Image 1 (tube, rainbow, N blue to C red):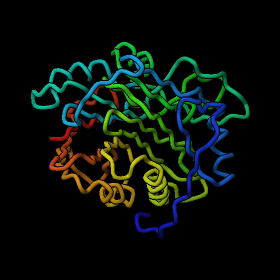
Image 2 (cartoon, helix red, strand yellow):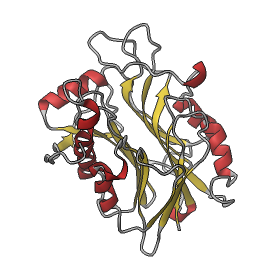
Image 3 (cartoon, rainbow, N blue to C red):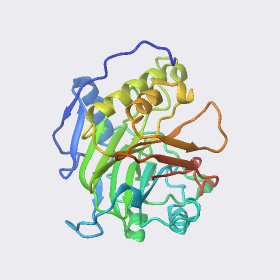
Image 4 (spheres, one colour):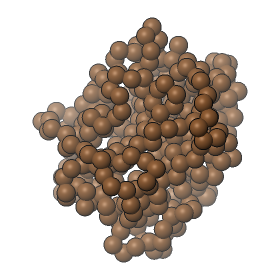
Length: 323
């Protein structure tokens, strides 16, 4: 329940690369050996992270946070029409006519349909979630290439739990018109699936994508216990994120069934309260799942709005900027 007693979040430390853990990322995982053993089984079911700098390795593009429009969006296992959304975003449809020089997409439940290993009996996978309307899922590597954007994609879990399922994995992604550097992945403690927070640096600021558990373990009151688990996960996340005082934007699907009253959401709100934030959300109500958090420069404030159209996903994109 939202009022469950707190527990000290598990400590995380750098972890060796190998298996699904690409050598070009810095990896963190819980120090607890049982947690690592559980995460390793999920890791065995997915491919390595995909990271591309399509603007040229080492290229320097100077951009202030105010030159960038940020998006947080759960694209529902590749159902979200990212291309159409980006076309509207660049045209200023979701920003009151303002056209930003750059965009950064912070995506949850992105899907990859290539370079995924064959199913192994000793690996773990999630029950396959199919895209809406039985369409083929939109491959995040392919669509970022079509957009000519840089990409960091880190799969959290295999999208399927048997050899009969298509070879797909799903996880979080950063798609950016600016170069990405200092790639990092934080594997979170949990009870069911594998969850990986990702972050990257863009010039003078950093961005991160967070997607927390929706349900707890089978041996608990799954819906009511999970707020406690999400609180542990988010505090583990914030203990490992880079530069606790630097400029940072977080796009998050916190899966907070109890909305902003859950400790996970409250903890992040306190961390980012130095930057004033305005929120324009459609359909205000108790069940808030998706959030953006901003830590901007001095004398800057942030805002984000929820887009009315879902673009094929089951979540509406959040579009935000600093001013």
